[in-house]
Image 1 (cartoon, one colour):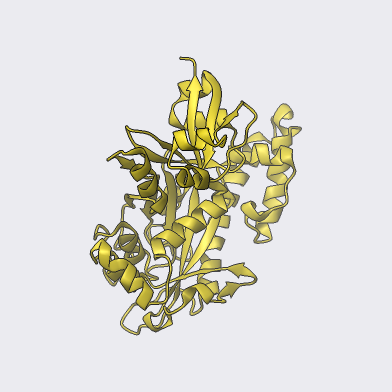
Image 2: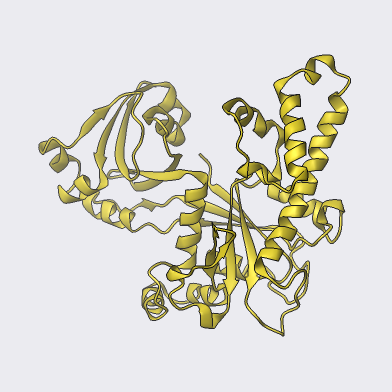
Length: 356
């Protein structure tokens, strides 16, 4: 699959661009103190931090490491009324449509020097953005319903029935991604390209003095876990030399950087996992959906691999490391030959056999 794409959205001046810069580790967005400073979405691709790759590279004696990648899109601040063109809303809502997941950034810090748009509480900010996405989706649903109400064939279809159901639920303020839909409905849902059907997670941009021991935070929105991050400190962290970052994290009482925690959350909400290939040419991480079969995983590397799939030679990461690679694992009987029905496990080390 191509690089995972995450759209960073929120009201103006909640810290989206600062967070974006921190995640990328360099200044590419204009984090100026005024709304709409980001007119076109900034896009940046970052490597997924992965300590396993270095271990694998040492074992197979390769100099080339290729991590998985994540694309972040810094989408300019939305405001109430964006769905009807307020601010620069229509353009930004379109940008969201191209992303696989949405990272909602809400403001949970106090700074009288930073202009504040919208509500005064983080959950209120989140609800304003969701309302704009819902309104835009209702516009899409209404367009479909109105355009097909006189089409006898379409009017009786499962798609039309689903559109009517979605309209009713969206009007109740519900997000499509949270709806309890049948398998048939879930197959049809992508045809509407709904913004609210995208998986999402919430990042609360907190004060610097709240940054200690964030992993124990109990910040929630109506039982929805929120990922707390201090974008300002994350940016400071990103400017440090790599060898100094781990020490700074320890001082803050953190085990993982904000980048790692954001990517981990994105993988979780999208149901993704990693597998690896390791040989003299390179040690590389690949991303697949949980439950992906061996042929589907092979297809992530190259479509020809999936079409011509014969089998997968698989070793678990712990066994690969404990036995110093392929030969050691094979000698211990830990190398498995898996067929077309095998479902990939997290951190499998794989070599695919295929016919071209």
